[in-house]
Image (cartoon, rainbow over all chains, first blue to last red; front, side, top):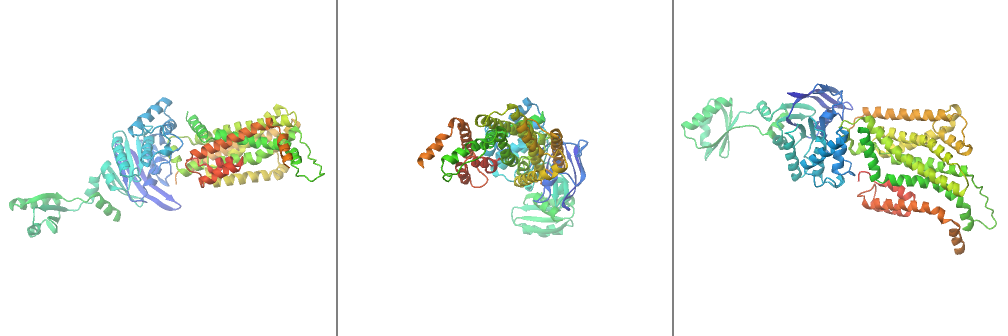
Length: 302
Length: 258
Length: 72
């Protein structure tokens, strides 16, 4: 069931629209990635959802509450470049934000310790944040976003500024958090989106181009291509394939043939039948799908 | 309580960055230095032989109230400057660095955020001002003669109202701009403007905030004040309230990220 | 001249002025300790050391007001 509805969100800065028209819904327990190139309006969208920015127009409702009310208790937010009070220790900072989120003193301390453990900062908890590395700060940032058990946590480019080790740590952490809460995170890196999210919001130039699963996105952009690999001499089968009425075009790629077809279903049966009848030495038979990368480029350039 | 959490954070920060040490010390030095050096100046000039032979040194010795008032002269210059420069980034720097993006997405009351900063700074300033005036009073008694303790207490309360007004102007400027230097410059400029208009405005109306300084003078010298001290105090307190409430209202309307 | 200088020195009742000197040295020491511990200042760090050491009283105060970086 959707618990967050975003309707016709629009944001202008000095008359220029950064967000043109964004509408989507989020379901409980989902991990959704907000995917788009730099400058697409990802940060602006997240800031409007967090209440840090006010939309020029549009409505955000959160379990029936609109953005005219204070929805901050339900939301955890990690900005792209989180800045802390560097003079505090990691533990002090977590307790501080927990208290600001109206946890009791006892609760705040136990929740802080629990999260420090979870994000792997237990050893460094009494060190000044000023001495933390980039990856540690990002993990502390996730901990502070989680501190008041929000119903939605939003992470703005949580891994893009990290080295490979830090990325891995944070991605694993997000994988963990999926079990606890709804996550919306922005990224411009396709493989990250593919790895951890169930759903995609594809944003480009302030317009939402797609909202749904990766499979759904692929379905909308389906190309009808079958890739057949042979043990050897694939060229000799081209003519037979071309002669089938379902096949439009055949292109050799090494030992493989890329077969463009009208309808995947009909073509599949026809080709497989040929293969069985003539004992083709197949090594693989694959219904072609565009990679996320290709899909992304296609949608963005439309 | 959320307000106490914010207040305690500010106070802890002021401990960690040594404000609780250097601000009181600064106020003590600012308040005590003039009465002390003025007392020893004739001696030093005479003995150091920098006066031409035969010149008669005729510096009138200040009375105890006059000596005590020297402290206020310095406080109005250096004390006010310290308050304004010390607080020029109190909100602006947090917004500029981006730390507010973490703090204000939590369900934090904007009123609490601003008033807690205001109050914690005020406690520090009052404490420092009191120590400064106490030190000055002590030296005046030793070097110049008796000055009633109640005069010190009374003038401390009067000056507290003025310095609160100064601090509140700085908070108000902090809400508008994100660059601490600009906040500092504009607050200093505004206080100078307010002070320089004193003569003109006082001719027409009673109750203009900088008049407090004239009342302090009168009070220290005569032990009582003529004219409408209470009106000035009430108007200043009202202005402080208006500035503080406007700061909160303006802050609430601001885009907190940019 | 030397005579008069020492006269000047002796003419000041040090018992009375000493507390101010102590307070002023505390300010200087606190500024130095903080300067030592802090990672970076506004402007070159060594310049602030000179200001703290050679401009007595205003030096340390200016360091705390302007030189010290609060996020450091």
